[in-house]
Each structure stands twice: as structure tokens, then as C-alpha cells.
Length: 370
Image (tube, rainbow, N blue to C red):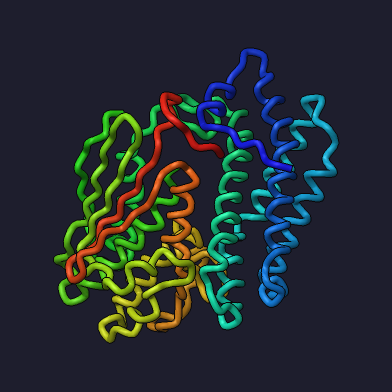
């Protein structure tokens, strides 16, 4: 059965009503739609090569989807307000149950790497699984948020979003994680503002740019070049450029950095300058409390970096934290799912520019569907 995807404009203009009927309509839509989408993902897991599908970690994720399908399919039709309240409780439970799916997928597929002759064969599966998960979580979170009366919000959609303020929030966090914990200022961020008017996945590459800049200036830790963010707007889309001076990406690796499981972290970990305080600092950049598997790195145990001191590994251990190479490919998949793109341009020996393009949701042009 095909899924019925909504445009952001539909979500925006059907997210309010005087009598509250929009909440019941949203719940009934989810009750029909979520089982269909989960069934497609279960089919995707069953189409994996046998040796991958039998991996215990991958099998655990597969079973999570099966249990979610059963719980959603068994839920009785939503008629009264009490039914909808119980459905919301189920959605919250499922969101919590599935919060580590990206981490588990990364860990499980890494365990299977020696059995995979061509990893490009897995890219369609990962792209579809990750973007489908993003869409379902957005729809569920939107429905739950419809119960809240927040100024300038309709569900999860902010009608007065400032990309500059949103990015500055993560800039402050990036700076404080360097300066507050270790006394090293870290890379500063500058803004060129050209915008007239939930980019959460953007922070994955932002943290990567920060780490690259710090690693390429270990000899001059108190004179680290700025990371410059340029925001531009036009009638069709919003473009964000992140420019660093982290040494760039070698030309022979540029085509590989958006492949799943490709990472230069293990090579950079062998740099002899990364001992002592610098190892602590750069581990902190990877294990920041706001980071996670979306951004391409998890701890060896498969837990989100920064969740506890135990998950960070011993100081100076070059094996921890391992990055699974999920940050850029996941960000690329998310950007394309949301009607945009993520592109890289590298000047080897100098730095890298990352361009994130996101389509407007004002309903004036062609829109993407969630």
C-alpha cells in the first residue's frame, strides 16, 4: 500500500481549528499512515542480504519496527478524546523506543562490513530507512506539538524562524565546549547575513567542521581561524554555507566522504600531537552532550557520546570515540528528503566549504513531502 505524504504547507494550514477538530484529523491520518510506512521499512529489512539481516544489532532494529507495527495496528479506531490521548501516549513511547535506531544501524552495519563486497549496495537501504524514520518522527512530533499553544508555532513548524539565531545557539555551545571545559577557545564562528526573513541535522556537519579546524591547528591552539557561516535567501530556497580552514579534503577522498561508514577519524587519531589535553579536547568535540549518532560518531559501546563519563572512554585512547562515518551521508539524505541538497567544495591544504540548500515552504513553488 502506498504512503500518503504531506507537504509542509498542508501541515501548516491544517494545524489549527476553532473546535479542535484538527487534532482528531491528524490522529486519524497517523493511525492510517504510520503502519503503512513501518510495513515498508520491515520489507526493506527483509530484503537485506542474509548475512546482514542476521546480525544481532540489525535484527534488534528489525524487531523494533515489527513491534511498533503491531502496537500501531492493534490500536482501536480513534473516536473520542480519551482515545486520542492514549494514542499520544503510544507515540511518545515509540519515539523513545526508537531514539537509538541510527546508532544501532551504524553499529550493526559496521559489524557486517567484512561481509559486504560493495557498500554502495546498502546506500539505498540506508537512505530510505533514515529518511523514512525522519519523516515518521516529524509527523509524530508534529501531532504531539499540536496540543501545545506556543507563540509563532503550528505544531513543530515555526512561522518566524530565524536561521541566524538557530545557528548561533549551536555556535555558543561549540565555543563553550572548548573554552569552558578545557580553557582552549576553539574555532570562532563569524556570520555574513543575507537572510530576509529544524535544521537540527546541520549541527552534525558543524561539529565536524569544528573538529577539522582544531585538528589542523594543533601547533597554534590559541590562534585558530574562524569558521564562517554565510546565510543567503532567495525566492526559491535558503542557502547556508559553512567555511572552515581545516586543511580541506584530499581530492582522492572527496567523492567518498558522503559514503556511509567513511571516516578519517581513525587516521587523525594517530597524530602524535593528539595526546594529553588535545586528546581530551577533541574527544569532547565528538562527545558533546548535544551530539549523537546523527552526526557521525558514537562511542564504542554504541551509546550517544556525552551521555555519561563512562561512554567517553579513557583519555588518550586513540580508539575512542569511534566515528562511524554517518554524519555527512545522513545530513545529505536528510537535506534531499526535505527538498534541498548538501554539497562540498574543498581547497586541499586550506579548507572546505559546505553548502546546505533548503527549499521554502511558503506554498508559492513546488514543495517536498514529508
